[in-house]
Image 1: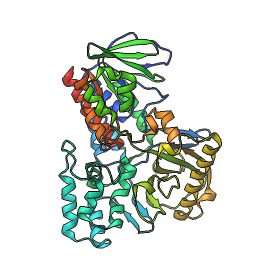
Image 2: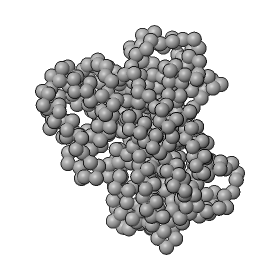
Image 3: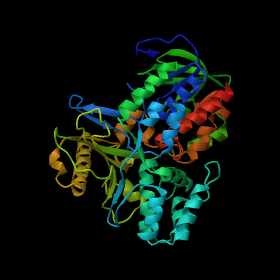
Image 4: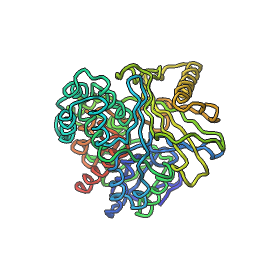
Amino acid sequence: MLFKSQDKISKSYDVIIIGSGLAGMTAANKLAKNGRAVLLLESHNKLGGFATWFKRKGGTQIFDISLHGFPFGMKKTCRKYWSKEISDAIIKIKGVRFKNPMYDLETDFTREDYTSKLINHFKIPEEKVHAFFKYLEEMNFYDPPKLTNGELFEKFFPGRKDVLRFLLEPIVYANGSNLEDPAITYGIVFSNFMSKGVYTFQGGTDQLIDKMKSELLKNGVDIKMHSRVDKILIENGKATGVLLKGDEIRSKAVLSNSNLLSTIFKMTGKEHFGSEYIKRAQKVRLNTSSCQVYMGMKEGETIPRMSDLIFYSEDEYFSTDLILSPKVGSQTFSIYYPDCRPHLKNHYAIVSSSNSRYEDWENLSEEDYKVKKQFLIDRALDSLEKVIPGVREKIDFVEAATPLTVEKYTLHQKGASFGTKFEGLDISMNMHKQVDGLFHTGSVGIIMSGWLGAANYGVIQAHGIEGYL
């Protein structure tokens, strides 16, 4: 049942899920298919979390928020936990390009092609390349971290900044990891992509979420949007429901798909957790945020077919500071050709994504904020012109989003685009051991971020809830 925003909910549930990101939605669908009574609450006016979209110019321009691209595993996850229709609409993108001062290369982002380029272009010995991939394959996120990303690359490719950039930079855009993070945050995500390349959803995020919404309702999930939860109800050390706009809604278990720190310190309250757990939770670092520039084409204009995903940088080398710099030396262009949304007539769209720090945006005056947003737009247009000459004249709509935009619409603290750093994963996965019936899922620990990681984490926590119930 789809509740209206003014509807009161009087019934109780097996599980209440707070937040409808891909983790929350996938968990809801899995539990409902198991016969559980599920209520899905979403603070925004549509489902999807960061997997969302918006329309402009009377609906003639539509833009996906997320950088489009996820591993083949998303196809398998959707077939098993959603539907064949959704899975069948997941298609491989037509190429990835890297354009920076070190090299200009195109790849299909598979292990075979990466192996070839590492050997033939970067002149890395074949045995070293195979040893590197074997090391990544043997990583397990349940094992304690052994190396940082920086140490990993120095171990296999000492002094090779060009190789480091080729291997790490795309994953930075996929999950926000950097040189200082544990190597597992890189290895598992990179290995997932390397299986069969990069995929996207044909039809756009709007059609994906609409199909998921229909599937949820068909399987009996109750959904209520415009519903920002005030508190998670805890009685005698057990989660018993939520407080929503002053009304209590009861359940046997609660699954939060909200920000990890907000779940603990705002909605639940640290008094309900053990002191050691709280000490560790207080040390969990939020991940970085991001900026986007959305560019729409004039009606009737076209651009030549090239790579769907372009990692563009004018920085001389890769570093954590440079990729987060407000100077926007690096950005990624997602190019949406008409075959991405074939149901729309000749629809082109281009989205620039750049990693950023919330701190560079939070205390700006209104005037300085406008100036900085305009710089972001101009930087994207200038850079894109170097990739697609003449494109600037074909664009008639531009809009920018910043970490403050991310914070506003997702409620993520500090606009964290990828949840928390790696230490957040243990806190998230063991929340139910602190408070009976209280579980957490979502974008945490970096390896549980992105579309595939979030969906699979929803499945993992749904299994945990089944065991508890």
